[in-house]
Length: 606
Image (cartoon, rainbow, N blue to C red; front, side):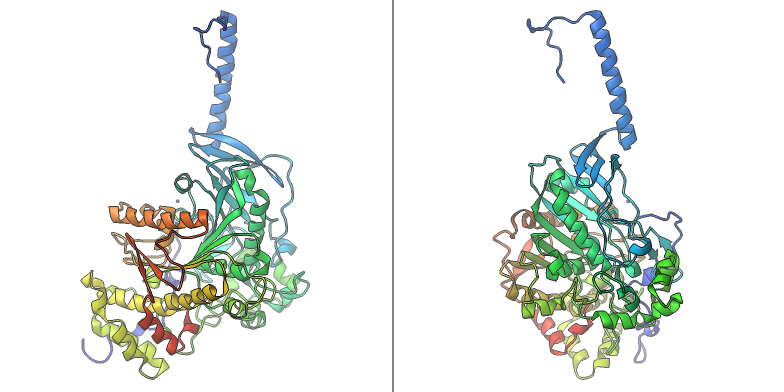
């Protein structure tokens, strides 16, 4: 390449967002709520039994026929000829779910009152009891969201969305099975607890012999908007973090009711991926969540969580200006579409679409906060809670996980697979050079392309994505894991997934890029056993990886510890691929570089 800039790529620096496909692509599907990730037999030889008469036989036959018709009718109504309808009583009323083969499913159970009208931007309230039996055969609406993340995106879902779903092997009150409580990701803006391939399922339930719960919580402006106008009259004297309050309310519902579904309220594992992982960290430090769960798994959550409520309220004035509102009454009267289209999705700060988080940072460029330290749900930044041992955090077994190439699900540059080594050097120098000093040259020395050449044609891409991943995600999570290990008396574990699937993965219809390596999500789709949903045909190595992830997560949920071969952190980091390997001080030189240069404030946020 000629000159000091790479051909065809120089204009791309900082030009698009982490969720570039969410921000830039058009949505063609018109389905508003589309998801993204899909008795006794007669013994005639027994002399104690009299042979029935013809009339008796006819009556019995007619009764059996009628019974068969009723069962068939119920099975038809349940939507599956192999399923029967099952009623379970909760503290709010009866729910009717389905029993299909070995799994009972109950979908769309309200865990809070609809957060509409004057309940918009307020803490969730308990649901109203019902007298009739509630149909729990189908998922309910996802929470209101816009896809792609743009004022021109399509509005989907509903504000009436606070429902949960249960998969269980039994409804025996005395079964006391461990419970896994799934918190979906989506940058706190999109998705639901019912995404195909990105949520619990019947096969996982059968395999694990545990109860699985998923749920929806308020998202984006409905779940996390902080404004002084919303604080006025609030029973908590706060604004923002409504989605976290929903999560806590759903956990309270589980504590009250999960025994009716075969679960043990004293063996609840919360686990979440991406912003779901951020939610797990939030629940770990929130006094409001203490006692509601007994284990926690954070998959690729963010590390930066420090904005005060007042800072967020000031940053969000742009939203208020766009709505034209001056007070809470006006905000409550806005329609769903206006709220979603008024959120600052694009270039201007606070830029809720996560601009550039899948790239190396530029000095001084930060993303606005969605989550806030409000003094109510979150008493202080999570790192400060642990450093200062502020009372109220949950001291429970804790797993913190990342993948080796987190941002590779949506790299900033569509042509990154065609980069040369010269391109790689140019981008590193261009971006890290904004920080001054020797940072670019030191980074290039620690991330040689030769380290990642199992697939020679994509060496540059893999190396660059690893560098971004270390800086933005993996190394900052090591710091959090160290803090947690020093503070908690319960065990803390750390893992890094290095497994690359057997073929490129297209995550869903919002992301046009095919991921090749250990991308953001690969661990959770491995646990759900849904790699096939994304890959199509999968290899034996893919199956081995899925079995490995499941083995350790299930063991942790059931026992509260990892098996003996997996040490607590910081004694070792578990490297997960087709086998488990333990490394002490994993990627220490690389992480030391970023820490020495104070790069962790640029870690993933929200």
